[in-house]
Length: 87
Image 1 (spheres, rainbow, N blue to C red):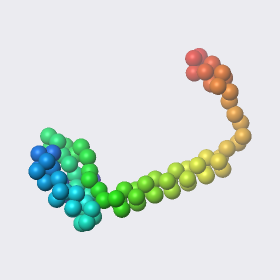
Image 2: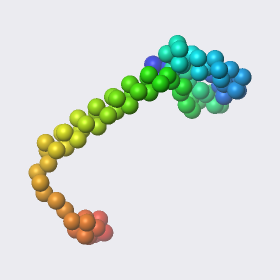
Image 3: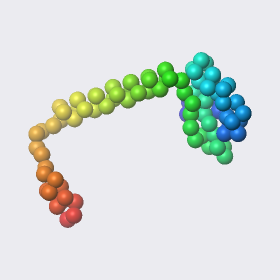
């Protein structure tokens, strides 16, 4: 993960939660939380979360527009789909 700027263990997090939150909120760091040496979570700023959500929404809208453009209008009934899946 190239965008992680630091990491702390869960033990260190317990002792320094305020510092980790400050690093993320004010320093715009992405701080990985590790457990048994493996990254299990990441603390990010609200601004980073909002940017990620905006990116995700833009991608979803683009995929929806592409799907609508490719739609040929053909539909399959639920019964037909079930029959096809049970064959």
